[in-house]
View 1: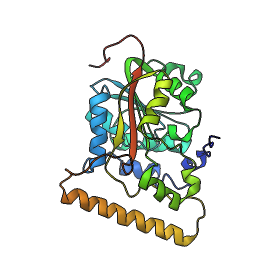
View 2 (view 1 turned 90 degrees about the vertical axis):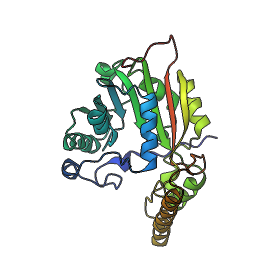
View 3 (view 1 turned 180 degrees about the vertical axis):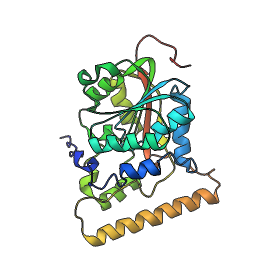
Length: 279
């Protein structure tokens, strides 16, 4: 019997612990991708290679609360950016982050899967992406089909989800079983399979990043010793990962299923071939 994923809505609300910043803070000190980090640079490579990111391209992020990438795409790739998030506080953070970065953009508070409620967005975007959204749902194939309808012909859908396998699974199991059960566990093949079942043609799929000791999170009321143990192991493992990267000058940093922090997928709606709108 397939285990149903636990609801995760409570994590994203104001004061729940996931969003630690306030709109006033990100307005003053906006959040952007830290391109000193190998993981962020490799994620940018995926966006640049597959994302139709040319000046004037329309980009939509789903589950955009506190988005680091939307202001980056607006400022550094001169894209027309929009974001959708179901939580009012998360949407407010995203607006503040855009404003603080000096970027123009549109943030909408609403359900990304409600196409009827967002008819003006259907068929408008060259790139639609999500980072940590789909793993919170069981009925993901129908949801992916809905999200793909925001794309123009020839548009690209990019999905990333946390890689809750291998070492990351062990760390999250220690930190909080409840949080672990809020995630569907994906590998590259499973993430590809659900997107193809939703009608997408695969362009690329794989793992992003070498290691992240802080991928897992504590949650709920575990015993204090487990909280301290989890926090200590996160810190130590992250320091070891950083030391490894520095010692090898980032040349020995394979992206592997048992330790990479994220799984990614890139696809386009199957059908007659169309040139990328912003090529």
